[in-house]
Length: 353
Ligand code: UDP
Image (cartoon, rainbow, N blue to C red; front, side, top):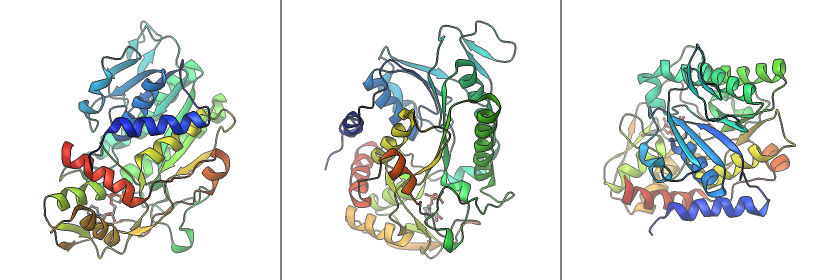
């Protein structure tokens, strides 16, 4: 199987078109626009004819994710760390750099944040900053432009929920260690959500929060120091290396393919009637990590052996969303199976890794 990213972008656009969803004519700021999910968003927006401003400092984003967009006249790239202020439509501001020629932004999508548990140990401060100061800075931009503010939060705000809170609904408050190895991410995303709600309350802003569950697909990063479970296992399987399961592999996750995820996010961004809601966007089919390893070994015809390593501290035991709210109010649900998504991701890895 060969893989073409364009086919998947077209699939998202076709699905959105069915619901008459287009961002043509809108000016949209995407922070983290060179990252895994951010770059998919930029691709769809540019194809649809929006003016897409991609802001990234390549801390985890990759130039190759957006290089092909640089020649498009409705795409603008700004190299900036969103933890520091930036002002659009100002020719001078004492507190930060200014982009004077962009006078009006319609939508701000704050997607900049590293999400790999390996990086929680290496870069905790920049993760904390982009989810707190970065959220404040982007809220400030949205406030000035009277723009819709869209915040990509995470299933991590639920921490390690007890059995009776899985599948997890938006109303669950979380079971999070504030001083553990994952706290730079979990707690700062929680603080980011609180920032969003504070701006909504105090400035009557139109805000939207999604909680994203484990997403994978082409462009997800692989590296021994930052790989998430899907890219790690695929890399190991296609190179016949040992597949490293942390713990006994009985912990669960639910995996959504990037096409389904991006469709869900954009459906919410576009929906003018749904404002102020927190919505889970993920796949509600739950797999153990051992099952995931076995499926990847089978799909790659790999000779890899499965080996077991210690389970990281505070690694959530189960993670699966309740997506009833997204089904009801966005008329959205994922349609791509784990196997189908993995086949495409594997094909992409074989040619692009
Ligand atoms: N995991 C694993 N082997 C790896 C990487 C991750 O067994 O090489 C496990 C990890 O301990 C966790 C699950 O896979 O239980 C999902 O990990 P991931 O890094 O994708 O992120 P998380 O869902 O924990 O944020």
